[in-house]
Image (cartoon, rainbow, N blue to C red; front, side, top):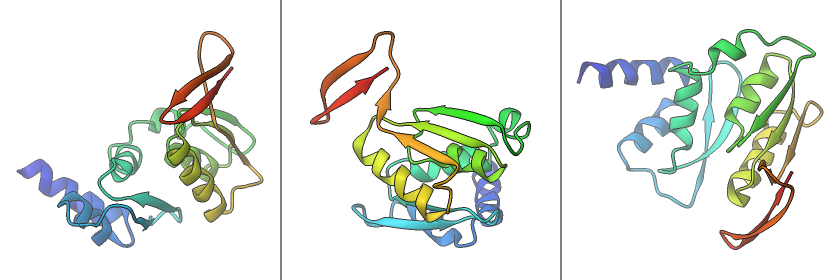
Length: 151
């Protein structure tokens, strides 16, 4: 119980509009909609309710699971984000000044990744491709009704 209370306090510190996160946590937000999670670090992320999108934001900015890498980034560094999801790590790296190549095979995640890149004004520094990474190049499909390009 104590850990949940502490997590809720961190949510309040991270989000400018924490009510979206709290409502998602409680399972109240309607699905099939996008919500704008405004973070105190300046990022704005379009996320989907009850999909795990908010959990990824929490992992990166509350639990800081990638801080070892993120804190070493500076302007001009190049990052390759394989499995970029909706772009949370991609945008965290871009916020630190890095140029980012983002790869995401899932069509719905990729669409939201592109929206988040544009929404935050990082189109010049972040380049996203709907690719997967595999041991051999080619095209595989169908995956969720779509072919996936491998390289």
